[in-house]
Image 1 (cartoon, rainbow, N blue to C red):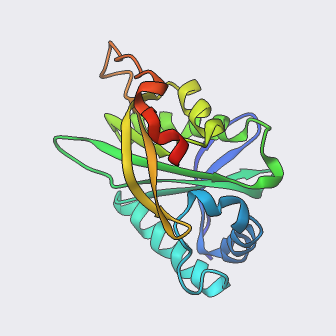
Image 2: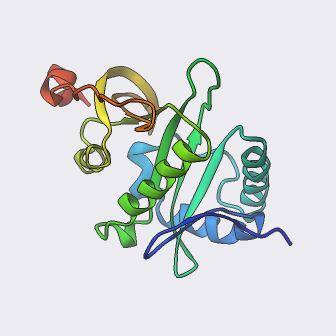
Amino acid sequence: MTADILIAETPRLQLVVPSPERAEEFCAYVERNLDFHRSSMPSPPKGFETSAFWRDRLAERFHHHKAGRLHGFAILCDGQLVGDMSFTQIMGEPQHSTVLGYKLDRSVEGRGYMQEALGAALAWMFDERKRHRIEANVRPNNKRSLALLERLGFIIEGYSHSYLRLDGRWCDHVRLALFNPREVQVIPSSLDLSLALGKSMSQA
């Protein structure tokens, strides 16, 4: 039996690399949040509703984590899965960057769990994985997520047209970034949100 790898603990949460033993738990989590996450996630792959799919997916992510190619974390509260996040597109010299994605169980929205979990994960990526820049991309109508990232220190860098195909259509995204505070002493100012979004905000 493969055990979770503990990454960080906060006052209320644990951040772990989930073992394949959590396949049924992930299957249930994804199914019950499918409609909630639909507008911000690509169409789910074939077989996603089965435990076998998640056992294989988690085993693959476990391997990638150990190899440093991808870091996918489960957010646990009292041992139960309440969210997940991933750091993908991990680039080495000269960029030392990665791209962040995250989701939360609808039943625990509004409790501050994601800010707490991301704070710990971002610190781990900077301190342990020595990333210089972490990027996140958010749909312009997702005000809650934009506010969360700005509270965490992300700055708005620009606007990406037709960035991802979600729920069957191409969608624009706001591009944000956070820099390793040990490496960047003077953080550039965030672009004015209205300037970054322009007229496209009403079209998102």
